[in-house]
Length: 331
Image 1 (tube, helix red, strand yellow):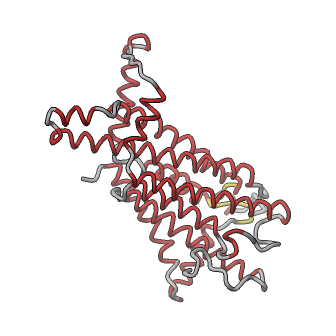
Image 2 (cartoon, rainbow, N blue to C red):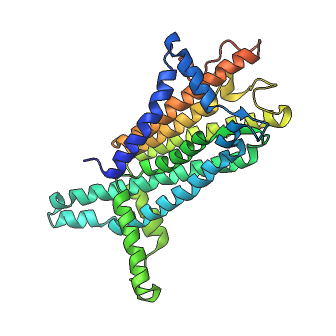
């Protein structure tokens, strides 16, 4: 049964997947659609603040807002879900005790909830690592003219996306986790700190170490894929940053070279798709919202890479002909 949160997320991701997917169809019938989508999403140079279009835009430097918001929002979801997970699964010894009393049939839904809770914690932890890295990179990289603007709808849609993405990773347990957090706040307000129920436990073993034993092989394989993509993206961004330091805006004066840039035009996008694929694998593939999140990231980054690849071909007569846009030997 789909919860109301899952329903909202599905309704949000689908409209975000369709436009980019249509723009990738290699047919001349979609040329006007691709042009409209490109003009809508690209940076705009509006030097005159009195222009009517100026009021519908925000500075491109606001790009860092997306990651700052994502860091705070993901941390909030992570802490809430972590405490909820600990509440319903404080010990690794309970399943064997329950089985000893021949009650495993009755407790299987509880065990599924525990696994889903700790899996959500693990996914949110990986997401927090990603958005924190991107925030640090973006703050140090985004330096553009005040006249460089983005449409306000693009800005808002991006903020909504970074609201939906972390929530998609934990939506199966989010309603219960939110209720747990609300109950804790209400109890604190009603009774005060001195009257709150207290429990003593070892943080390292109970909250940090024991959860690792509740993870399956899917989580560890997914984490390995995620970290591989994360590290490759770090390297690609370092190359792009060095170009900015020596030649100004990326792609204007020099052709990016080295590492994955020798085979594709946008390896940083390929690396991001890889790390989201890692999140999908770590989730076990059971949640439709995570599949849609991955599809949204893959479709939009593939479209963005195609646009960048075409711009490189227009700007550089000597652009390497053996490079693909994003997927080696495919696209």
